[in-house]
Length: 74
Image (cartoon, rainbow, N blue to C red; front, side):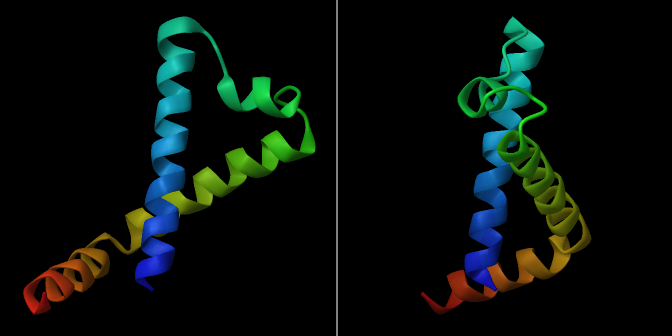
């Protein structure tokens, strides 16, 4: 599960940086890389970021517990 947590957090960082670029400079990096907002790959990236946000939001307490337990064992 920690692997999924890390992957989800990584995609959320990518999504957050992309939205920061959109807000500050009106530049959508994901769309630029993958050929526009309507391209299948860009839409997949947007959907994955959204799913990761739902996952993190729904499991935030369990994620905190897993990571705290792992840190206490180190």
